[in-house]
Length: 142
Image 1: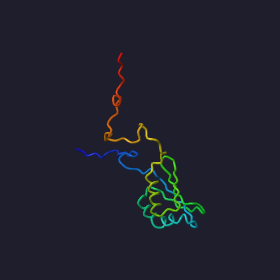
Image 2: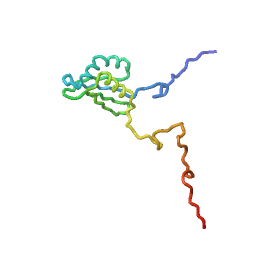
Image 3: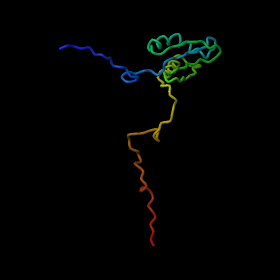
Image 4: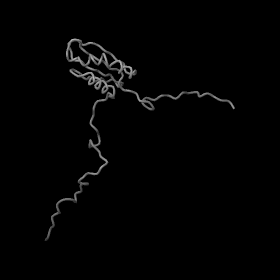
């Protein structure tokens, strides 16, 4: 009996079997002079190297924007981009904003379909409404 090698390798499908971050690039814009960039400058010096090493699939760009507030701009797989202003935030808060952009899908926020925004497995404390509850129907005596 002859042993044959497998002719084809399994083909990866986008999102099936592996989690793919939708954020492909993060741009960090800061100002060296302005006080509103103090937290962003501290983040870039202390937290960004670790953040970048933990997420090698995301491109990181750092560029100065003189006399402007600091912003983080995220570019996503579907071609959209989102910008978050991080003026006067501490470095921990800037990290949280970067994580928000990292975890976004890039889609626009849209209303939840289905009528009610909140669904619950618990029954209402007042019970289920019925048209037969409440006042008695008028009786006609004639």
